[in-house]
Amino acid sequence: MNHHAPDGAPLFAIHNNVAEIRLDRLGHHNRIDPDGLPLLMEYLATVRLSGQCRALVITGTGTKTFSSGYTLSAIVERLDSRFEQFLDAVEDCPVPTICALNGSVYGGATDLALCCDFRIGVTDARMFMPAARIGLHYYPGGMRRYVTALGVTNAKRLFLTGMTIDATEMLRIGFLTDLVAPDALRERVSDYVGAILECEPGVVTSMKQQLNRIGAGDSDACISRTAYEGSLTSTALRERLASITR
Image (tube, rainbow, N blue to C red; front, top):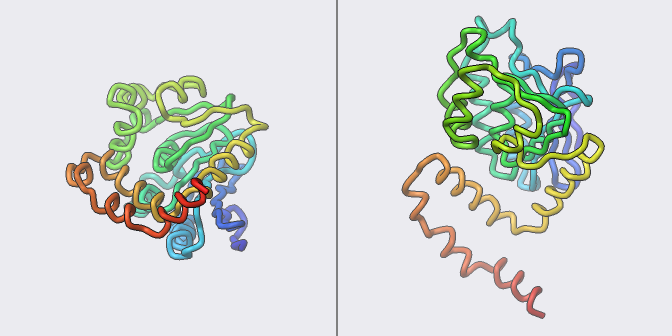
């Protein structure tokens, strides 16, 4: 399945139960434009409702920049709740999400990457968060993701200084899950996708939801045993165990 989009709009395709969203404004460092947000939300709804998608890959066109973030000229008059709603929808996507960082990442696109479950970057990538430099107090959801993923000290360093860090440091602080040479990015993404496809989809979805809730500090999620106890009596568990023990 391929989705035809206007020139410069984000691209979308589904192949072999894996969806891909590709930011496609190469001449503008794959920035996220407010006019593209409805289309991005439509893509996420397709993934959520299809019943067939097992994973979602988010990447960018080219080899220099994953994304430069939200269109700077639109921040004052067109940065509204729709951008946050898009990011929250990525974070809440029921299937595992992989951000294939084909290059450097800046601004709001760093938060988009943190919304994903896995972030695979390339060795020549760099990142920075310029909010303080342009006088923007970042929205709470984005700061929460920074603190949850990177710890408060690293979140402060990136938010309060606007300093640029390289790929090695991105990996060290946990912004990246994995770091590869540029020509190995596609293969490494395929490794993650292949591993996900071997897992039981219902269990993956339920564990992702619970892990997200635990990471957000939801104490009820920490003690809930419902999904665990349900899996003990599932047909999927019995069939998979039987195939291993034959």
